[in-house]
Length: 140
Image (cartoon, rainbow, N blue to C red; front, side, top):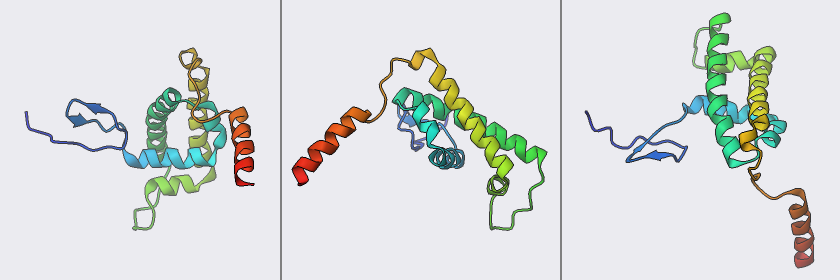
């Protein structure tokens, strides 16, 4: 077997000496962009385990959906200005379909009882309020 060396990724998950890429970056970028535009998704997946599960399933399902949209819709030939994904997502109905898929994944993860006892990332509202009060006192 050939020595593969080190295969880098952004996931930080390591198996022995080889880094295992979990997602092709373009799909991850698309999911991140649409997730940032839809903050209600973050509210559903606010713990490390939920985020990992969400990303794992969202990347797969968005990739499949984009592939299906490519097969079902004509896209212009590549002229160097935009990719086929950008062309598809420029149409509101396709963008809405991808966002709906992301929301469905987030809803499923949020409803999964295996994640019910997991702490959210970041402070809760009471902690934020206490910090604001402390900062006001400290900064005058």
